[in-house]
Length: 242
Ligand code: CA
Figure 1 (cartoon, helix red, strand yellow):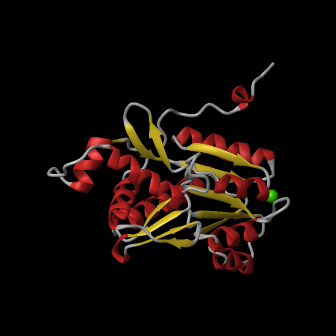
Figure 2 (cartoon, rainbow, N blue to C red):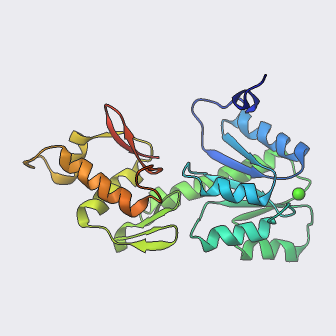
């Protein structure tokens, strides 16, 4: 018997980013998936708007969504509108069979970043994906003004953080810890490194201080602090974001 794991397409060990493809037509979805995997992207697949929405809510960050307009349950325009309303600013490349100007305008109005009309070539699709992801990286790292991870958005210059669209209040230490994590997603930090970076080398105390602050941060960031999705414990090493 095949396990579900065996049915997943093989994924490269290191990827250029995760792309969620939302398309109900099997041939188009699979063709796009194959082309992007060959380019080195990790690919996630959804056949309808409802599945796509729940995938976007998971903690694993998605770097780009390729979103067809005509979809079962929730169409692409409504899905994009819902994501933006929740404060999710993941780049969205909208796909449509209709090439009309009004469709394109509505797509961009609901918050899509780019728009591609079927039929299109894989070369063009890949070029658009690359450009959107490059632009996003520039926005988050180049300007240093907004950091995003999953549902968390940080505005360092305004000392402001929102989680799932709601503003939360953090102590200065909590803010600096989160800023460090968000600047280096998935990087593991030992308690000693965190003490040095946040408290300074002249800090007198022990690494339990770090654990306490992580616990407080979890209570503010996580939907279920006892089962964290953002601030993860790496046993024997320390902590990481995502
Ligand atoms: Ca469709």
